Length: 142
Image 1 (spheres, rainbow, N blue to C red):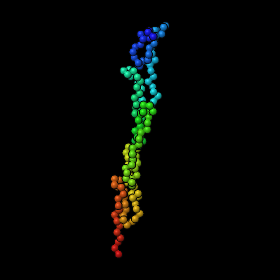
Image 2 (cartoon, rainbow, N blue to C red; image 1 turned 180 degrees about the vertical axis):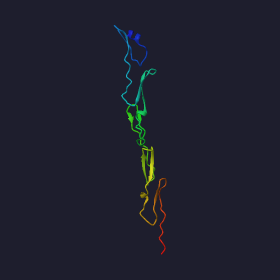
Image 3 (tube, one colour; image 1 turned 180 degrees about the horizontal axis):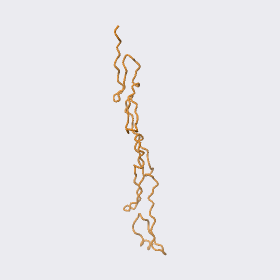
Image 4 (cartoon, rainbow, N blue to C red; image 1 turned 135 degrees about the vertical axis):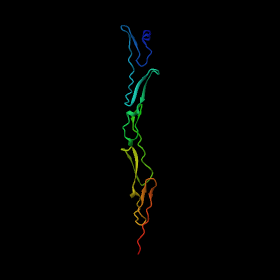
């Protein structure tokens, strides 16, 4: 008991030193900071006498815009991101995510507005306002 205290250097991160009767003071075994989570930076905090596991989100990022931004959970590791919402609430647009331009695209689908009536004109899809009425078709003179 008493001689071991004489060997203690007061540092947590290098382990608890012991006193051996034949060799004297023996270095301690440092605590293993590795928590087994691939995306944390594992360190020993000498001031708090504890192991620290800091999430490093960049390790998890797969550089894909359309599947959201992945993050690091200090316990569970890399967590999938939340994909961006593509819905623009305009019924006649085809809403997609473009990985090349890292953007949401709302392509007008004019066929979604067609009421199949020739005489009231060709309906179109406005990407902001939705379906727009066509110009009426008038017959020729008799």
